Amino acid sequence: MHISVEPRNGYAVLHLRGEFDTYYVPALQDEVNGLSESGVNNLVLNLRLVRFINSTALGAMIKFSKQLTAAGGALRISRPSKFCRDIIEKVGLDRVVPVYDSDEEAGASFKAAVVTTGETDKVFEEDQSSVLFSPADRSRVEHFLSEEERSGGQGKNPIHQHSFGDKWSGLGRMAGLDDEGLSFTWEGGRTSLDPFTMAQMLALGTDWKVKFRLPLLQKGYCEAMTTVNEVEERPGGVKVRVAFKEIDEDTLASVRQYAADMSYLKDELKKATE
Image (cartoon, rainbow, N blue to C red; front, top):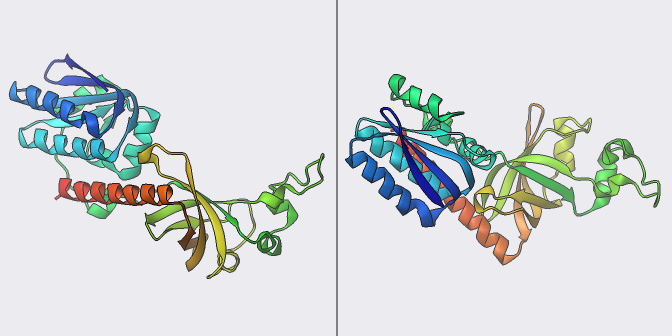
């Protein structure tokens, strides 16, 4: 990662480019320390050209924010790349370190800066990553969904005459993840199922193949075979907990790292609002 410092009137902008990960945190810490020692405690991190950021970097930004606030200044983020913005909003960092669309807006905010605190539960939100799930037993879907619903309105493949619904998958939102399994919510998608029928379809003991993302580790979809061990009906949908039944060791190691990263960030965000 490359770091360049641009002095402004009453603050400085640090332009970051590349991958902001564990390796480069000390270099940025040195820049922050140097500026603070020279009396510049209002800093803006421009993340427009940062294509990847990990949990250690996010934790470092919380640390920088607390350090600068203690010195009478503040930290701001400007122009984050799509990847960075998604991660920042996902973990709730934007509620501790404000995000702006330009360096100028971020700089102007220092004049009206107010230290605020809030409830920890509102700072750290559940992960909202997508979860794709499909049944190990395809006949289960046929029992609950019509051919129209299974195919998403596409009917049959005109060449092979196979139903598109033969490969039906549901799309849920991850609500929790650890090395034993994951939980997700499902609102039924394009189906006409009510919460009671959704719960019957995703019944206790049924096996489902799931695909999910671990964005902080810069991976694509991870896959695992799972078994449903909890189902909760909710207004407009269900919340489901599945236990890993078959998962390769590399994926499991990534899941453990991701869970540890999220736990670390949650603790850091709690400390930042105390």
